[in-house]
Amino acid sequence: MPENKFKKIININWSETDVLSSLKFFSRWLGIAGIIGFLSGSASAFFLWALDWATQWREAHVWIIWLLPLGGLVSGLIYHYIGPEVEKGNNLILEEINTPKETIPFKMAPLVLASTLISHFFGGSAGREGTAVQMGGAIADQFTGLFKLKQTDRQLLLITGISAGFASVFGTPLAGAIFALEVMIIGKLRHEAILPSVLAAVIADYTCRFWHIGHTRYSIPLVPEMKPELFLWTLLAGVIFGVCSLLFVRTTDFFKRIFKSKISFPPLRPVAGGVIIATAVYLMGTTRYIGLGIPVIVDSFYLELPSYDFVIKILLTAVTLGAGFKGGEVTPLFFIGAVLGNALAFFIPLPLALLAGMGFVAVFCGATNTPIASIFLGMELFGAECGVFVAIACLMAYLFSGKAGIYSSQITGNSKNGLVDF
Image (cartoon, rainbow, N blue to C red; front, top):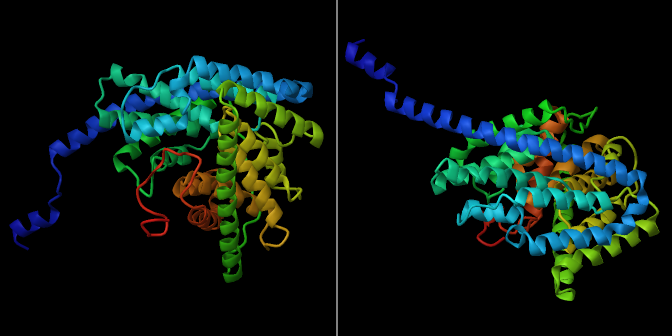
């Protein structure tokens, strides 16, 4: 073979400049992601420790639920007089990524931390993802000026904050990284943000575990071989999960409109919501539907639960968040999906634990419009063996949950079904 042809064959189309540029990008974002990951992971560790303490104290002193209206008033007054500019929460972070304007005030972090602990301490039905994401985003954005970042780099910085917060609060670094990329724009990903997002997620997760904060783990002991009939049943389950996601979003929006239209002074809205929730808990005679509901989620993988559990959790969470209590929607979505999957085992011939796991991530997927992150979440929590079932359920839930979601500031990049209007 002639020497010139041999050189063409072995020629690699990269230059020294490409390598140096990549090394510079990696080094820069490794440093930034390391700082954001450590700080966000540490914040999540403290938050999870405090949340566990608040939950245990509440369960040991159930009478505290009657003070939920007072807790709601305190939380409402805090945001009304101290933090009105950060009350949008997660939606504010998404807005700053999509249309950058001003640095997110650091006070978002302590305000959402305190308000979420109030919600759980007094007995609201809320989650924890919103708190971790807001703390991560607020912490990250403080480095915009310090590092003198351009707007495009600031967007990547905020993505690392979301990634670090989500990954550390749930112990799922891959899902956290993809969630931060996917939640901004429905149907599109920013590939240049993948490396910073993954680095921040891994470091934040490690940091949280370094502080000896554990996460709940779930087990699906039996995953059957995929067969045609099971494939069809999985499709049906995914559709049901998607409709449930839509029901949750619509119900929460309904109560937000009701509280807003009936009560003009914002701090009084959680007072009214607190009265409703405390009364409901008293009449039901159980606290299984308030707080995070982790024990019920764990039980859904092993025991047959009442088929109406998911309806009650939807209502109590919708009232809690609709009234203005802080926390998040994701863990309640896990609860709703897991117990709905548990109920579907009555007529769908799939293992109970598998259906609970499918619902766990699929209802979350439909409500957040993040199918790829949801699939990773399922495999990180339950094992790769259930990946095919989880993926089908998530994709069907994503398709059948409509275009609404829990994050009103999400932008639609591509429609879910290929149509311009869906």
